[in-house]
Image (tube, rainbow, N blue to C red; front, side, top):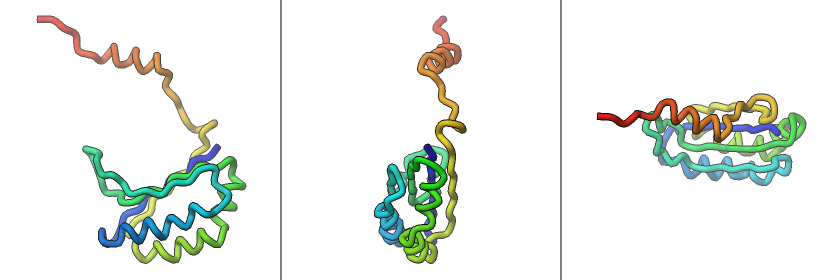
Length: 119
């Protein structure tokens, strides 16, 4: 499975809703296993520059390519490009590119870094 993540910043914050609407047409494209369009909640303590997120899951490269070739994808570009400042995209293969930490490994790491009591 492939994950497709695209991050957008708006030229003008007043246009964020229009960007979301323009990106929402992507949800009608049939090739995605799952597709979400959302505003960034901007609650991260280190950076909140991103305004809108598109998150998609695709069964394979062919489905992702068909999604990008669809006429609604072009319509979304037509609507959003004039309103956005930056666009960052990342695609990765979940089965090949992702490194998962087991719960036990995470717990062991937490125990190693936890402060010890004493006085």
